[in-house]
Amino acid sequence: NFPIHVTRRVHLLTETRALTPDTQLGLLERMLRVFHAPRRTFESITDGGGFPDWAAPVALVILFWAAHNLAALPIVAPDTPSSIQGWEQLTEEQRQVATQGLEVWRSHGWFTMPLVESFSYLAFVGLVLLGIARWVLRSPLTLRQTLTVKAYASLVAIPQWILLTPLVRAGDATASPLKFTLGVFLADPSASQVGRFLGSLNVFDLWQAVVIGIGLSVMSGQPSKRTVTIIIVLWVAWAAIGALAPAPMPPPTPAP
Image (cartoon, rainbow, N blue to C red; front, top):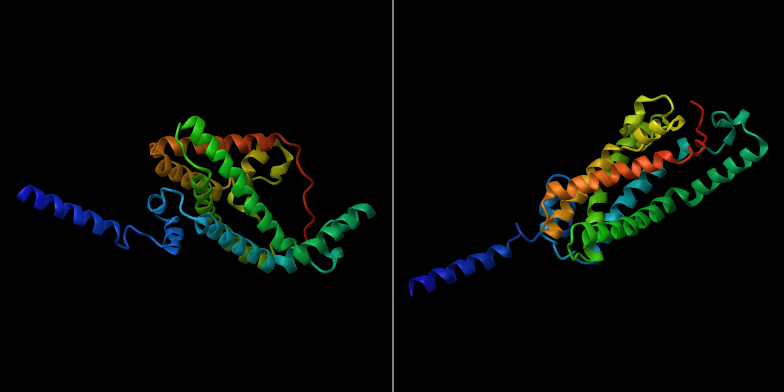
């Protein structure tokens, strides 16, 4: 009877441990652990979780991004377009376009851009990760799992918006995610392909790539070293491809 008794004790202890708060994390704790223990977050939802697991993190990112835009509104979108730096050098047509853009940004653009871009990136990256899982990692992950990985990883963008807000409020209308890239050391990163490449290597994007790699590792059972390396290589390749595109016209900024 002794072996049976021991087996039952082990079974009961295993069941009890599976139900403890330490292993069954709530939604809030899962989101918080992304910043310091992402593997623990994904280990608690290896099946991809439910609707809140990809909707709630993205909604939180949108909230902080929109709050940053709203706080920076008087600086980046002034009521008087004539205060824009270089306004005198613009043609009449360019002034009309700039004025319309500022009006759209003040009315709803500060909120709709984070909303649209966040969910668009969620869908796009989720599909890309699904392809990587199926064809590179040879793992039968589902779209729900890859959406969840991307959603939780996107939370690391929140500190970026928190750090940028006081910079813009202090009068630095040019404060943008570029501040956290190697392009910050260049006078005009958009002037060359190398500058655009360095300007796209954002430290928070790198952090997010690492978290995505860890999430894929947990979901697929692959070594984290392999999955993180794959995601970082793809991220750098994406930045390189983007650098080859023609430089966009820089947006007007308020005069200091």
